[in-house]
Image (tube, one colour):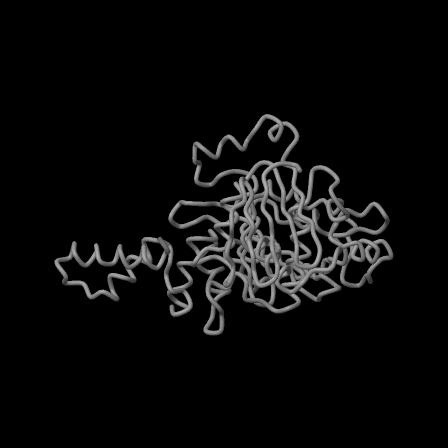
Amino acid sequence: MTLNRDIAKRARCIQLESGDTIPFQQARLTAARELGALPVHTMAPAERIPLRVEYTGESEAAAQSAINDDTHWLGLDHCSDDQRAFRALLALALFNGNVYTGPTARWGYAVVASYDPVMSPRRDQLVMVAERAPENVATRLLATEGADSRGVPGLRHEVSYTCHGRLSLCLRHLPTGALLTITGDPAACQRGNKRSRVPLHGYLTVDHDLTAHERRALAAVPPMSGDATTLLGGLVSRYNLVDRRGRWATSLSWDPLERPGVERRKEPEVIQHGAVRRLWGSGDSWTFRWTGYPEPRDLALALTHREAGIRGTGFTRHGDAYRVALGTATLDLCDGKG
């Protein structure tokens, strides 16, 4: 039975329960809310803000900064081309790690999962709320000079400031021009003071051009189609998403829903050595294989969800693996090291 039929069936039940006092369209909207299928594109921005908060865990102030009259849907994927390209590249850092599985695994960013950051995607920047230690998260990302640099190639410290007594660090990605803000302020306020361009622990700033090592690292990244860029960027936007109806969650370090059946993913090997993640591919075809959290089904549901997913996506199941498709691009989600 399709979701539309489920909504219609539930709407008729709501009407019946009300003694036919509730009009069908009103009953259908209530049913859609119950089933996680609200027509987001028809909702006013003020209505979409609290809905987005239910999924992302952002503060209402942060979500309000991300949604305006021009924002598409919940704003998780509505961004500039530069931002989309940067997020796809960042995905190769976030979702590769523990064992050497490709050039981007050396960027050393997968460990950021332990900080449980909250992503707040905007049209012209990606805001990452890391209340516990924003500076620690930033230092996991920023590149240093020399061939042993483990940061994301081309990412630079641009400015730091404090707001509401919390530190925020603005990082600029030179190849794309995209902005990444890492903040300890849940409101992600950008009206800070005490601005500074002092390098952090010797990390590179926007005054430093790309190094030869960084150019080689970027050249080792496979080509990526437009649809694949959207899919991989969508992984970053949904880094720590939780279904408001409690059916799925995408956290990489634990299960926010604390489902007994999901606890099996914290296997002894994962506890002792950490999760293994490998995201790789080329052109239209990409594969993400991992141990630990989340379940492949959860991530497939998040990417294709009626309210919080990427518009135009769908998934098919092949045994224990899930294939998410967008246009001509596919992303296979698989359990295990491979």
